[in-house]
Length: 542
Image (cartoon, rainbow, N blue to C red; front, side, top):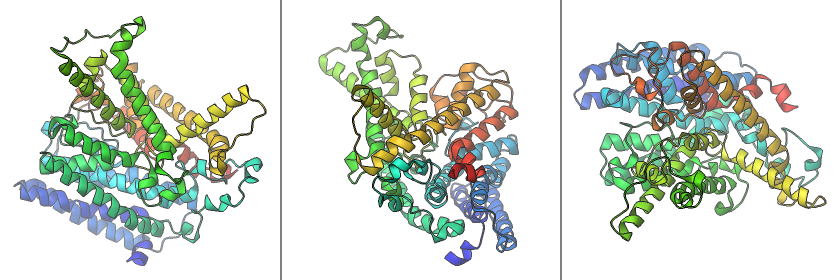
């Protein structure tokens, strides 16, 4: 089986998986009595299965493209072209929406962005299941492609741990034997991306599916419905934020459900928990993991800021609450309970947006009222920009790059105080602090320019600057629910049918604006620096 599938292009393999996945919503629709939807998904799945098999036979012996261009075309093909066949049953089930809007919705799911053009209550449960499956498969693909395709090319965050990019002779002479340990990707399978993808997929899929089933079972125990719990579990592991509705996680299941989701969101903060994580392991102990430490610091900072803001407002005018404070609790116990609820709502929401999932806590509104904030959009957008761990399903800049820049900044401050000091930390820390920080800074600049370019293109239409900024950040960080968590001025330049929800920020956009944001989702998922590196591999190696 490995050899047989290894002869096929990656795009064909992904298409076959997609066609087989359509049988799941077909079975669900049949079980709930939606015969029309069952026929649509079963017919689409069967037709696409035949089509992909024919393409597989035709391309099995196709000549290989140059490695870097082949990897780039594979990644772009999966995230930009594969949503088109995925949109066929969706568009057939909602004939008034059109194929373009259905493609946009499927692209949003596959890139794990989770932005939706439709009101959740007006979409059939089977279509919600299809959205969730597509987001789950997108998360599985990026987990697998990161180690199978991006790691050998030293892009996608792997570049800051590799000596062959941004090389510096001063660092080559330190810990010479460590160089071989940090370049395990360039092996004999480099010339066979499909086989690497299959082998890593077979190692990652059982862990990914097992964690999803475990969370699903836990959420069902807390009282959530079977389908809602399944979508919540898939949306958590893929960080797509796709669910049956836009309600807070604890609206069914309470704090226990949110605690379970928060526990599984930790997998998006570091690659350490997944197969292939050894390439990015900087420390032997979990408690010293830099990505987890940065994440803990950011979440704690946001939580303490929101919880302590009323106390700071008693002494500093600039911290006065924007909203009128809530009435005082009748007793000390009620006040402590309200403070604890605000702390939990802030912690869960901060963790969710840091992993670019974008869910809110049932206590989030209470936390906002406690802190006296009308719309803390800048704080949530900043967390989404920071992002999760390298080579995980999370989007954003990634925590390891933030850590590298923080190391470099601390070293520069140390040199101001002690110019003749010699920094230690070992070869890995030296790598992160030197060339790694340099490459991280380049990525920050490319990411910032991408945000500026996207905002400029979105603002060409009648979209306010605030709305254009939030939508651009949400697309580039793959955090679609960000637009729903922050009140936006709606746009009514386009329509997606009777089930559309323009008040959420996406549905009312013009087709050209949606196309720009779709490109931003793909660029954010693959990272613009990785795309540039794969387009110009010679310049990247230099």
